[in-house]
Length: 115
View 1 (cartoon, rainbow, N blue to C red):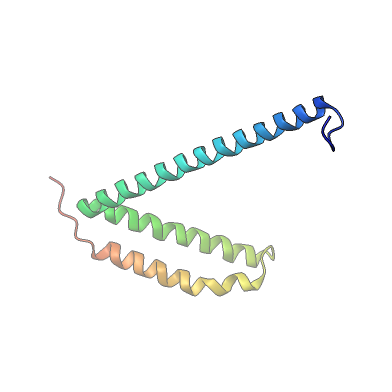
View 2: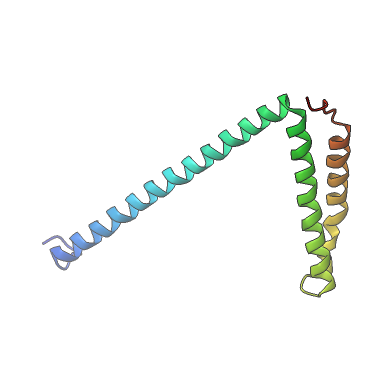
């Protein structure tokens, strides 16, 4: 019997556990990679559509601005209810500037009339 191994059955159990861990890690990395690739593919598809369709571009810009507005409202309500610290308000001016740029770009986007 090799030094450090008390019984062959413990050695086999340890090997099986290591094999299961390695298989789980490999499968997990593959799944995360597939999800990431799908997300990148969808983002590229969306960007391509936005470059060709001005209505879709305007809709995307307005949705992004609305998302920033909702997050800002949640931050303000959280601070008012004393669930968040006052320091959470420090980032709001940057968010307001981003909202302004998004809405200004959406308004300036020329949309052809519907046929």
